[in-house]
Every structure is written in structure tokens, then in C-alpha cells.
Amino acid sequence: MFKQICFFRKRPDMTAEEFLDYYENQHSQLAAKMGRKRTIDKAVRYVRRYLQPELNPVTLEAHDPGFDCIM
Image (cartoon, rainbow, N blue to C red):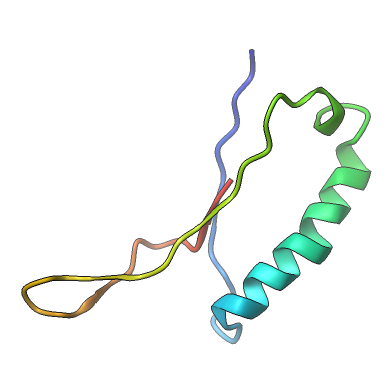
């Protein structure tokens, strides 16, 4: 079994909504076309998690994990 984990960061000029739209409607479709015969069709799961900044409960400052999506 082969497992792959990727961490993605959005461009600074993109909002979170623009990043999600781009990734779901353009990037993931392009990747599926390029790798369909080798990987995507044989994948058991294809999971993405989009992160939201969390506030520190003491300082109320937003914590930046360093990436916006885990695939």
C-alpha cells in the first residue's frame, strides 16, 4: 500500500474561498486527468481537509499552521 500526504498553501493574493474553488474545480481535475491511469482510479480514498485559522483562547491571536489544505 502506498500513502501520500501533501500540504498546500494558497497564494497570498487568494482568499480561502478562491483557493477552495480553484483547488476543487481546476487543480484536482487536472491532476485526475494526468494521473488517472496510474493513481486516481486505483486510489481507495481521496481526502482533502481545508484548514481554518484557530484563535488562541488566551491571546485571541490567530494561529497560522503554515498550510491551508491537507491532501
